[in-house]
Image (cartoon, rainbow, N blue to C red; front, side):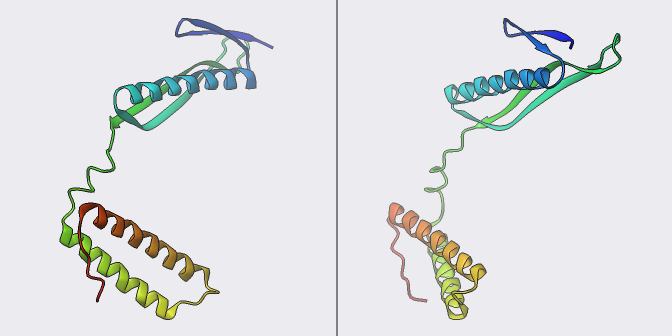
Length: 148
């Protein structure tokens, strides 16, 4: 089996063509993605997308498809501080969202059948969302009137 030599980032790799070359090049490119992740952490960014490509070509001597290299890319974006939006929402909007969720929960509870997994999951989802909004209101010091 044909052995191909690859070099990248100051290292030399030798793989037999076929599965060993594909996985060897892919694992090297995956290590590059780890370097990109470390870079993102150090620069207060996050990775929005990654891509690994394995490059193939026809060997002129054997006329077979062989691995000739690889490429890895990452797209970065500014880190989204999940608390930045928390303080920017209008208190009246939060109150209204809580009231709307309470109304939806009451309506769903009136037709709720414990044997129906769809309504059970929907009810649980609404209650989790309500808990999150109540926590947000509490953090902001918003008093919510729970009467509808």
